[in-house]
Amino acid sequence: MVTPGALRVPLLVLPLLLASGQKNSTSEPNISELPRKVCLGIINMDLYETFYLRSTAKCFTKCKQSKYKSCDLGNLQRYWVDYETHLVEESMTETVDLSFLKTSVKNFSTNISEDVHFSLTPSQLPRQVMEDEQKPADRVRLPRSLFATLQGSRATVRLAISVLDIGPGDLFKGPQLSLEDSGSVLNNRLVGLSVGRMRVTGLAEPLEIAFSHQPQPPNMTLTCVFWDVAKGPTGDWSSEGCSTEPGAKQTVCHCDHLTFFALLLRPVLDKDTAQTLTRISQAGCGASMIFLAFTIILYTALRPASPNGHRHWDCQQLWPLHHP
Image (cartoon, rainbow, N blue to C red; front, side, top):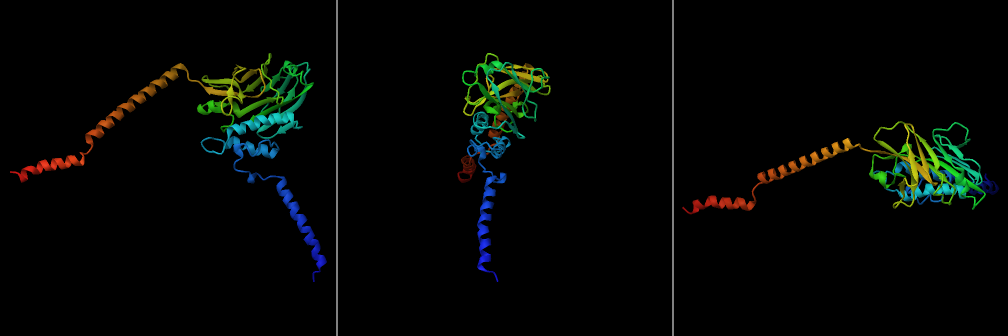
C-alpha cells in the first residue's frame, strides 16, 4: 500500500523536472523552429549570437528573387553592416570563426609608428602579419596615417576585419548587378573594415586590399568597389574613392575610406563582337517583320466570308428560280 508520504516526494519533484525541461528547451533555439520570415531582416535585428548569425546567413542562398519572395534585401544588408559596428562598439569578442564569416577584432594605438598588415587567406581568420614577412596573396594594408587621423578622439582604436561569404543569392548583389545577370562578386567574398560608428573617409594615403584570383578572359573586367549604403533604395556598389590595379592572378584595390569592399567581375563585349550581335539582332527583327506581314496577308486571303456575305450570295443565286 502506497502511503501519502510516499506520493508527496514524486509530486514535488515533478514540477521541478517540468521547469527544468522547459528551461532547457528555451535556452537553445532549434534551427528547425526558425521563423519563416527571418529573411525579412526584422526578427533577428540587433541579435548577434551565433544562432542568429547562422539563421540570418541562410538568407544568402534563399534570397533569390525568382525563387524566394520573403526577403528584404535592405534590412539584411543593414544587419551585416551593423554587425561590424556591434563588434567594435558593444562586443568583447576578439574572433568569430564560422563557415561563412571570419572576423578578427584588435585594439591599436592611434599613435602607431608603422603600417598594419593583415592576411586575408580564404577559410582562415584574418591574421596580423609583420611588415617584413612574406606578403600573402590575399591581404590588407592599413596605413599608419589612418590611425593618426583618429588621435583627436581617443588614444586607442578598436578595429574589426571581416571576410564574409555572401553565397550565390541576391544579397549584396545590388541593383546594377541584378540587371546584369552576367556580373558577379569575385568568389562571393566581401572584406569588411570598421572602427565602429566613426566615419573614415578621404584618407590622404589610401588603404590597400589585394584579391587573388584565377586568370580571367580578355573580355572580363575587374573593378574595386565598396558597398555604399546611401546609394539607391537598399544600397549598391560604388567605385568612388577606389582605384583598381589589375594583374593576371591578383588585383590590388586602393581606397580612401573604411567599409565593405569587393571585387566585381563584369564581361565586356569587344567592338567586333558587339557589331556582330547588333547585325544579328537587326536581321532577326527584319525577318520577324517579314513573316508577320506574310501571316497577316495569308490570314486575310484565306479568311471565310462573313455570314451576311453567304446569305447575299444565296439570294442572288435563288432570284432566277422565283422570277423567270
